[in-house]
Every structure is written in structure tokens, then in C-alpha cells.
Image 1 (cartoon, helix red, strand yellow):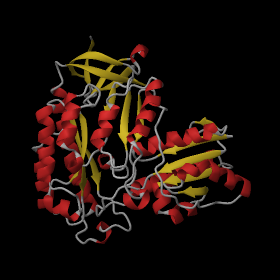
Image 2 (cartoon, helix red, strand yellow):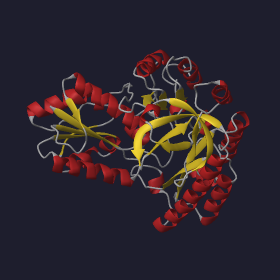
Image 3 (cartoon, rainbow, N blue to C red):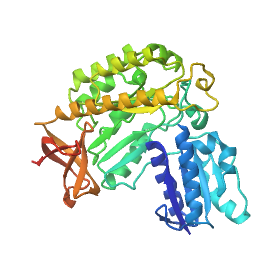
Image 4 (cartoon, helix red, strand yellow):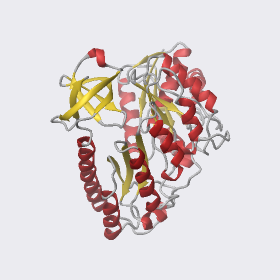
Length: 424
């Protein structure tokens, strides 16, 4: 039987889709590309925004058109938060939430043979996952769930409490990844910095252990809450040859009043102090931040305050999100709704700021000799790769460079804005 996959959302979902794929192949299924006829189609869903919900519905409809006789399985966050909605979409034959999706093969077989849609019993567990479909890097799941309850977020409802495996288990998985010739891993999870809550270990100790895995050349930490990014972690990354000098910190707002409404566990002064600490130890580190615009109650003055704060931070780029109301959250009940057009205009201002910051970040790399890990993708005769600090570099396609870390002297930027240079 043939099975295809379609993944929406975060890197954690991509890692889990890859792991689910291996469950099917272990049972004799053949994996095909989404868009090809298949007997089973698995859609790993996201529900972080209304747009993510819409994309999930569209994927279900597309799968039904391509493979009208297929069993379409909807798994993940949309399936978890909105089981009734997902189960009611024409074509969806089986719906499994996050705690049940690793029982998917058994559920599929039961559904096919019984000819009925099943909702599996919910279980609380950590299901290991890592991706192998990209020969350049692998997403390695180290943590799941969240015990934070930000007022806008549904993740604790759909992913459950914070939990993780033992460090020794993760190191074993990292060794498997390295044995496949993959040079970079990206640590994924819902709240990665909270690692150790269920085992009495710590994120710092995890990084120390992974730093010694032979065969890996880069380890990226993924997104870490600013209040969980300790001085010891920053110093460790600064001293390591493998731990990438690349930090992604969810800020969400540069206005303390809005951070309080969001029920975030820090204020902007702590965020600024963390960024300053990184810059002190790693002047060329890549530092990204998530920002939400249009949160309920955000006035023009609040946004101006936030924009000014972010503008003066030495960040490398921003991920900008327009607030999307999620049912069942505190934010959905708050007054002071921001008009959609206003929120989108604020997003545009932050996106423009992000472009300026990325340009300045890239400019600081010119004249440096750095290691670049090139990817397999080709566009207009060019290939691209990333430095350890997450600066994008482009070069004429050369198959021998794919999946290898090579030394490049950066000399400028191309028409696309990416860095350019020459191999050392």
C-alpha cells in the first residue's frame, strides 16, 4: 500500500512526520510524494492561527481529489483542538490528536478493516521523533508539551504538559542521525528550554552531551524562551565548535503592558539583557525574535513603544505574526480588539524593520571566512546554504558542495540579498 504525507506548522511537526513515515515503512508501506495517488494520506496539522486551520482543510480537500478512495488521516494540533471540526470535513476518515498519532499504523489498519472512523483513546507519553528526509540537516525532537499558559496560546491544550526523554536516549538518536551522514541537527520541541522537567536533567546538560557526539558538525538550539536562556548556556555555545551561535528568542511584544496581558514570564528588560549577553560573548551570532502584532488592547502608543524597543535591539531578523484569535484562550475574551487592517499595517512596519536588520546583520559578515553548509535545492542555477550564525549564502550550483560544511570568504551580497563569496 502507498502512503503520502503533508505537514503543516513547526519543525517539531516535520520531525514527527518523518518518524511516522518510518512506522509505515516498517510495516511494508511505500511512501510517495503528496500529490501522487496513495492508499493512505496523512495530514499532520497545525492550529496556531486561523490560516493554519484553513490550510489543513485545503490539504484534506486536495488529497480527496487526487486519491478519492484513500483513507485520509488528520493528526496533530488541529485534530486535537478541533476534533469535531476535523472529523466533519468531507474526506477525513480518521482523526488522531497529538497523544495518539504514534499509534497511527494500528489505527489505520483497524479503520480499513472495520470500514469506520475511529478516535483512539488518549495517552500521555513522550514519542521520540527525528527527521531523515533532508540529507543536510535533521530535526530532532527533545521535548514536548508546555506548562506555560500564555493568554493567546492553545498549545498546552493540544500538546499537554511539558515532558522529555532522558539525555542518553537523545544522544543515541543523535548518533543514528550522524551515522546517516547528516551534519546538522536542529533541536525541536514546544518549549525546548524547559527540557529536564520530567527527568530531573537540564537543557544545559543536554547541550553538553550533544556537543560530544562524533560526526555532527552543527547543533542548533531552536527557539528558547528568554527566561530559560541562562548565562551558562550562552557561555557554552560561545566556547563550542559545534553548538551554533544562533539564537531564536520569542519576544512577542516590546511593550511591557502587552507582555503582561499575554501572561508572558518575563518583561522586556530581561529580553534586552539576554540579547546583550549574547552579543558580549558572540558578536556575530544570529539572533531572531518572534513578534505578535494586533494583540487585544494594543494601542497605537503600545505598538510605537514596542517598535522603538525592537529597533534599538541588535537583532538579526524578526518572525512577525498578526494576532489570530484562538477559541478557548483568555485572549479571545479580552476587550480592545484591534482592527485587522491596523494589525496588518503594524506587521508591515515590523517586516520592513526585519529586512533592515537582516541587511545589517549580513553586512557585518562581509570580509569574514566562515563555514557554510549548502543544501540540495537549486534555483536559477544557484544553490544556497547557511553559516552557523544562520546567514544565508548563495553560490553557483556545485553538486560536490551539497551536504558539506566548506570554508567560504564572504565578499558581498547578491541581487537576492543573500551573501556571496568564494570557496577557500
